Image (cartoon, rainbow, N blue to C red; front, side, top):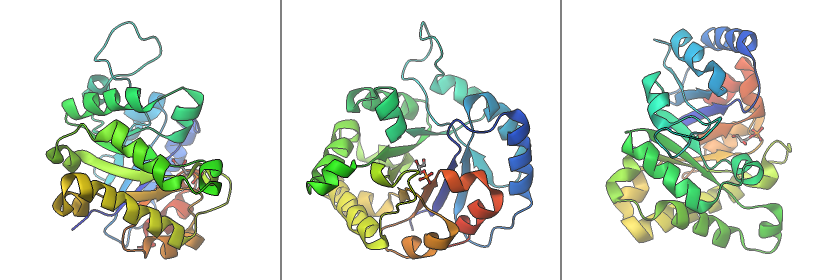
Amino acid sequence: MRKQIVAGNWKMNNDLAQTETLIANLKAQTKTTNAEVMIAPTATNLWHAYNSTKGTGIEVIAQNMHFAENGAYTGEVSAAMLKSIGINTVILGHSERREYFNETDETLAKKVDAALAKGMRIIFCFGEELADRKAGNEEAVVGSQIKNALFHLAAADFQNIVLAYEPVWAIGTGETATADQAQDMHAFIRKTLADKYGNDVADEVSILYGGSVKPANAEEIFSKPDVDGGLIGGAALNAEDFFGIVNAF
Ligand SMILES: O=C[C@H](O)COP(=O)(O)O
């Protein structure tokens, strides 16, 4: 049975005081589904968030990491450093990292390897831009993003990989992919995995949808057979909205 996951990516939002407030508000919410709940605060607040969510069932995860173990990489954080403060899951390949920080399939493959080598779980993000979809190239783009960054892995590595399909045109725009568009792409992603690794692997990998998910549209999106949860941006900054999505399964 695939895991259902709702992960909140706070992006570069919330200082320490705001992090404390949002976590207090999250703790006041009630979960009525089996979905795993994760939050990804900024690096400066990971330690605080980790400590203040202990025992709540909310997993604190990182938004990014470097592929090197340590060394002369000013401003970066390694998998070992994340592990040392109790963080076991990292988001990699978010489109904002690809666009603003020049992350490529090649550097992402190295990050994937570094995270797996430390036993971390990865939420690996990818998705096409609007021009790709208009040209009918969305499957080709998504397929190559997956193959280039992940297809050097062994089948067993996918036990620690969650995929997140985030069409770039739907991120923070208010424009959501329709539930059918999400399902079609998720089915394509699962087939891509099955063609390479077989159905047993493909059927076990959770595939999240991200892009303007809100309480009002989550239920329809999550009702699709190949959608196993969501990676939530804006709506994750409000505890009620976030749990409205968590409880939409
Ligand atoms: O990581 C989250 C995604 O970028 C979605 O962001 P959004 O929910 O604000 O569209």
